[in-house]
Figure 1 (cartoon, rainbow, N blue to C red):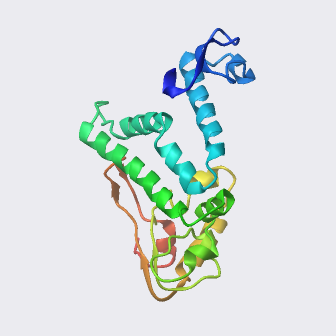
Figure 2 (figure 1 turned 45 degrees about the vertical axis):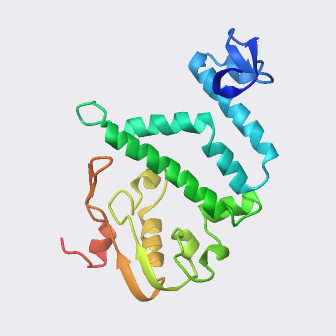
Length: 225
């Protein structure tokens, strides 16, 4: 058994990479000039994981396999490490452990949600765009603003109303328009029949970022300049 527990061959034909899984050692991707031993091992483990998912038909089974894989453990550890770096470049070990715990908790949450779906395409559609199934029955419905179009609820909470998040400056820099973001804000605040709760964060204790309220809150005269 080699890295990440896959069956390996002694040496691939591309650049002489060793300990690659059978079937991947001759992959043309390995001929790229920027691929090093570490990246080759990472890609090999990803290739093996994706191949193993073919035997798991339901979204929940696939998410369980991903979350329990060595590859996910590696990525979670790297993300947690980055999120725990202080301004002086030292690592807050407690914050690192908490960040890693949150990453795995999100995977578990997705797995629980996925148990309600038999097909992966329906699950992915529900996660990305929302679906009618996610707005039926009692309880709390978690929807994107796009997915909430045409729907109404007695109480609506709109979160992340910080400049840079809503409006989303990143999307705008990639060709989006402030008018589209403004229309989305209108959609969000008109979904409530009775109570509308708007919220924003002033400070992110994990990322150590200060926020200012969304310009839309000022435009709607919900906040004073």
